[in-house]
Image 1 (tube, rainbow over the protein chains, first blue to last red):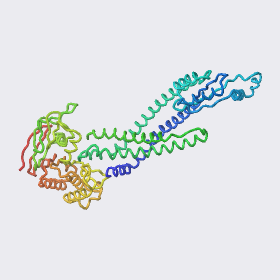
Image 2 (cartoon, helix red, strand yellow):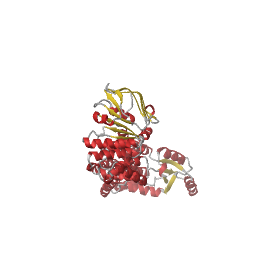
Image 3 (tube, one colour):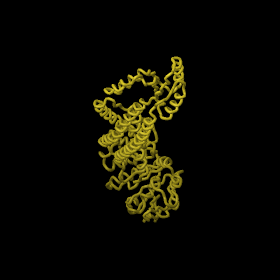
Length: 285
Length: 223
């Protein structure tokens, strides 16, 4: 209780320095917050792209109604499949006509419908990965009544390469911004501690243990970090609302990311306090 | 034996020798004056006793603590047994007199009721009961030094170190501070005072250690 009281009175006593520390920490966290917001949206774009991953199974011309039923039963037995839609030859032609748009008259020259019947199959989200799609497609093509499958092998490979590259770039930027944030916060906290160097020194001289000296300052770091994280979250949210007006698909950070950001803010401030305190505790007059 | 220096030398990386071959002992109840010109090594001896400095050769033993085997934790425990008073008082200006004196008690985890009782008693003994809510900068130099002494004594340590305690005070006030330190000694606490006021030290008729150029020149006098 005494230590907590000390932490609050430390912030009050530091006055201007505390405000400056919170402002600089907030600014530094803000950059990290904007980065996280961008990451959240990047993930959303990738999720959307993955949604487009599907397998089309083209059926043989002479599939009977009972053959269709047993094929449906076989497809339903594959656990990775989320949904399957039967597309009749007539429906397939209509779709093609719609895709051709104003040039659909070309199709009028056809004497008979060349489109095969098919099943459009979507996999459960966690299985929309190249290897899984390939293995499911290979399984489907062996089913009786299935002539061929199409799943955009090139497109999935490209998508996965893009995902890998973006994830790597994202992690690199995250590391740089994160480390820069920790360093800025550390140095700011150090300035506030410098003003109280004598306090730390005197406590050591009267027989306080390192923990007794450090705890109020570490608690102060928690309070600084929390306030800064909350302010910067509010600002990032404000920025999100402004962007959302222009780009309605924009999403805000999910709860897990908000939690990570808050903990990151607190930990940077505590880490800054810790490093500075260790230096002061070792220092002599 | 409360304090023992066994052939202690201290030199710095730049080659400066602060202390050379010091042997001395301080017993329980002793009142010892450490005199010598500036730079003679008085402060280094003081700092070695509260383990803020370590010898480059030899060993310093204070109670059950040896300079050869100190840890952060042990240093904190040792400092609870050794009160220290400085020339520049080293009071925290943003804490009241009461809070300054309460610091060592808080550091050892005493309860608030115990803290109140002990701080009141020690304030009474240094004659500053009425100043408990004042801030240090509102006090005179002599009063500030009394507060510093009260802070050093509040844990009732067996040893009190005072490094030039009257260096910033006028002669009358200095005399009062010496009187207070003698009083503390009469209560059973060993007192070691570093001072360059050779005359004052001589008048007290106590044991005097004379330090010149980092070497102990004489150890004598006193009752």
